[in-house]
Image 1 (cartoon, rainbow, N blue to C red):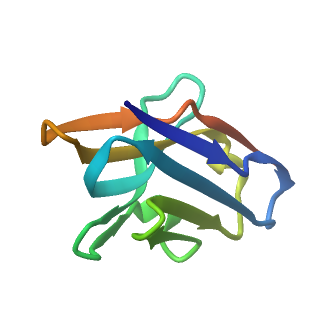
Image 2 (cartoon, rainbow, N blue to C red):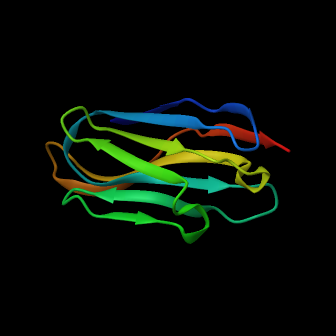
Image 3 (cartoon, one colour):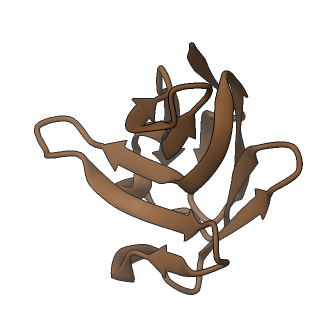
Length: 121
């Protein structure tokens, strides 16, 4: 019913930049939230950044000032611009959305397959 397709991960040196993108498609009536989580080896999945349908954003303290989130409401996409990357940013990054599907108008959470980001020191 709903698919999230991510792109943009990879290997980068410390101090470098990467941009992740995610596109939602399927039987979508409306999107409430889109964002990114990450999970490093041996750690719990954590919120990186999110954007609500009303334009509000939530950025994790660990990435404030370095990461930015962008939404294209018309295209149902979300991007994460990551600058000044650090080795501790190494993780699998997951696109996340909470949206309402059509035609049943049921809200649900959906996840992308994850994309690896590796920052070398």
